[in-house]
Length: 125
Length: 190
Image (cartoon, rainbow over all chains, first blue to last red; front, top):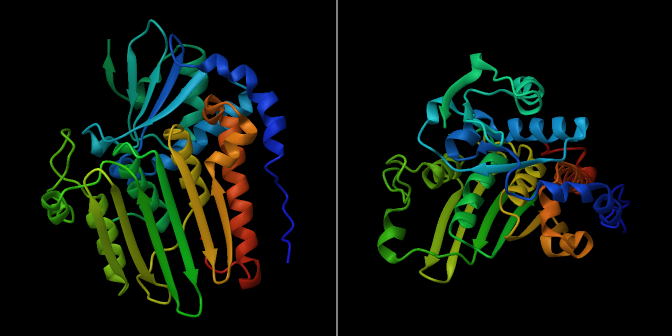
């Protein structure tokens, strides 16, 4: 039996065209979001936070941002951890991030440059 | 302990990526007649020598420097044994590692499958340089996703960082998993 598929790998060709200008997000001097995805992060819900970030970026059509994951950085009690890096500004680490915090952090900090202080647990210059 | 199988898969498969695997095969087999779920993650990464392999199931063994405990493998082993399943890890320095965990499907402590599609999409996005192969079997039917096939269409590996592309891959996997479970009336999809 051939199972009907709604999505087909052929769709990727179209998607490729749409996502093309994203390649401007190639590393180097661009905004960056880093999500902690160690055992501690996963247990705290980091994967859901990452999905919320991807959805928000996609919804807003933001393409000049590189999203990365990283392992445990030893602050397990604050997981899920999300770092926002804007070129030329200090790296800001948000802790205990929930999917519902994501749109605010992206809108206020990533886009507008205003740190969401109540969720900040660290800053590195 | 983690919440569901999808979280264990993410955690264990990340070990493979961190061991610089060029290829990681993730197999999840759901056998309804044997009432068994078997997870197998095989990689061609660094592997472990006998000494490390002996210690790796101990939570106080880790290769990481940020903290002195490593819970990924002990967690998975505990979860498998809690539902009268099995756990096996084989490894060879320079060859790679195979982690295998079995779960009794009808056991009260068997973890739910969880969001497998998000796990695979997260792995692909996090380690796009690695060739991820994901095989999902329900009885005699299966679905395989090979990142090499996807790249055949995308051509540019950088596109695996695009939220649009990652979300598409996630939905694609989800659809195919749902199709495999179709005859069961959605059983097993958490």
